[in-house]
Length: 231
Image (cartoon, rainbow, N blue to C red):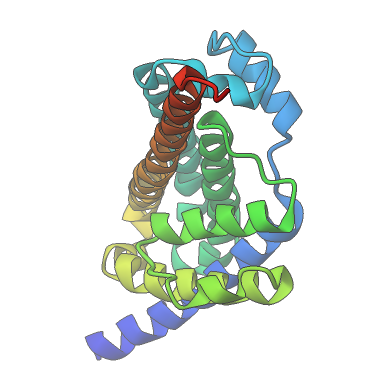
């Protein structure tokens, strides 16, 4: 009986996540220009554009990333406490809002480390990061990255399948009505923290790779310019 309940809950969580992430893909988007203003005003990041973050010390970006993740965790906890009062009856709307909070956190981390998402390729990269945050390996799907309308739904399905398996043991506690509010807050807090930390690691690694590539290109250009001219 316990296994049947877990299987039912896993399917419900997976369906809710697919719905929430699909809605997040269609309607939830952090405006890059507004977020740039927020970075400058609220976080004191001294840049006029996103390329400027590559000239900052990496620990400065990491400190802002910590703050962004904590903010998402707090929002998710508040949302989880409210919806948690309904136990499993509210799991679908809860996951819809949680998906939006999580994807906005991922988007902010992407921008912070210098990666916008204006083109189809950039949007695909953003969802690759979301998949990485969920612990999903997308090596096979990378070949179809250019077909964005096919790629994103497949990624969402993979993310939902992995995430539902990861959290079902924890969310099973929401069948206890009197405890569901506290459980909902704690689980949502954990969910955004886990995804935020994984997404941060993904973007940080990409950021450092870009820095290294630019550094090597500058060294190469300097070497060429120092060569004696023929004649």
